[in-house]
Image 1 (tube, rainbow, N blue to C red):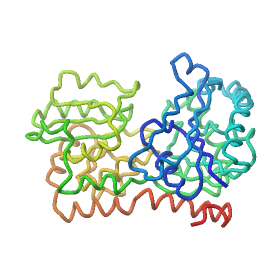
Image 2: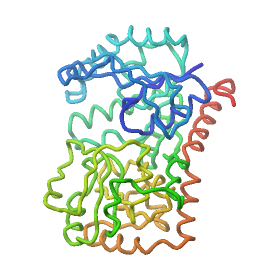
Image 3: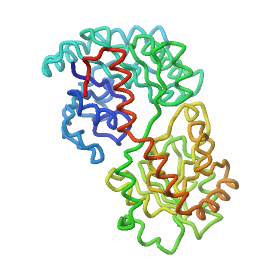
Image 4: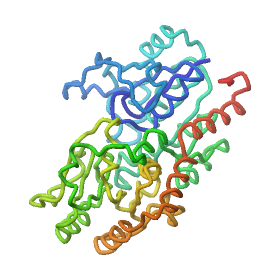
Length: 394
């Protein structure tokens, strides 16, 4: 029995939870990674379903062995419609995609796979696929990304609940997601996100170099964030700090999403937006940071996340400043917690002095205890117990 992964993001996109997990599961069983099916409207945006270039995410040793497939863009849009209309279109989508999914399974010789689902919208496809056990890996509170009461919020919540109720096993990536989903499925397990410890811990080595894009800042204190820049980031506070502290340089490593307005950074010479960076470059950037940032605004979505960058930062030994994200609060003995420009500035200043060797070692030890290898093994053990001892045996 192999795994068919119904993913929440393309394999070729930024390295996220689905790739981290599937890149390790494939060491146990074959994995077919299916990019989330696109709406027919994506054709107007130039999306190409034939873009099959293999990408090996460098910090996942086995990921080169994952089989990746991109579904054709033939699904009807469902998210921003009234619930009755959305439900009808989801049924049509399942039928329209049935033959494509079945052809992929036949090509891979999968007659009764285990479906490892990250995307709640996959509930529209499961009824039309060959029967097999279902694992729902709910990594975030998906509906929280949209305003409460909006059609998207309502429809995604509905699909999320249906997916949880359908699954044989549900994994929750944060406490908030766990509390929500255990009401839908008694087989819900809290297994938080982690880090590729070895990859990021390389920045803790004395011999590790600093990214060339930061070397000209050697006479300044560098405060940095690595990750996607979206509506979660408190741009207003970050801009205020940059304006008040010209002796600091704020570096944001990652793509800027359309839902984030970064115009507050205009005219600030001590703010750098690098754009997308390869995963191989991230430790080199963090090596050049004096303080690592998780400056998220606290809203419904953020209350349900477990930021991957927490343990990635800690693996480098660098001090970390975060806003009071619920998932980060249990680590407030090692992470500086603050909110708003004034308090964040104070926390950053204090964190710059937080380089006692024992503190550095404690941060690294915490990250080591939160590795993807450990998390994936925890998930496989739950599946073995629930699905049967014959699945993914060591």
